[in-house]
Length: 148
Image (cartoon, rainbow, N blue to C red; front, top):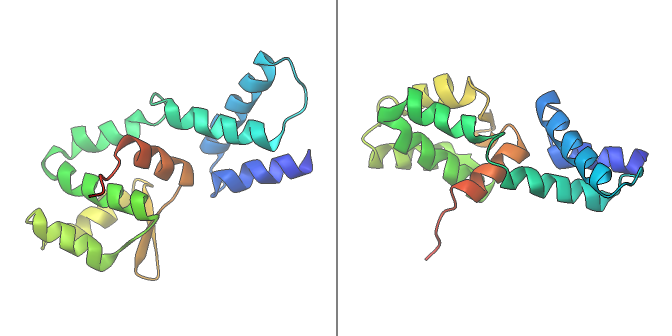
């Protein structure tokens, strides 16, 4: 059981109680539906995948940006989508997106005051990463970047 606990926590990435709770609830539901007492790594993976398919738990992260920051939502959306697709995004890549959206002057404030302050991303050595791998994977599945 200890290995499954470690596997579950590693799957979440950052130990954010809300995300841990969501994954545990999904795993509990799998065990309940299959009338089994023992959690497996396969159950953790299935629970994680189930969470990605359920928009209800994460929809607020997207709708909050589109509702409260409607004018700059296309910029924020592009930054998060590229970050999710690549698992990180650099300052230069964000600036390039800002230029496309005519936000050269306010891009850094928008990143700091919205995406970092609200817990979407964090900065490590001039690159930005999603705070939660679960949110990143949900964003990637919800807003895929179409490759040509």
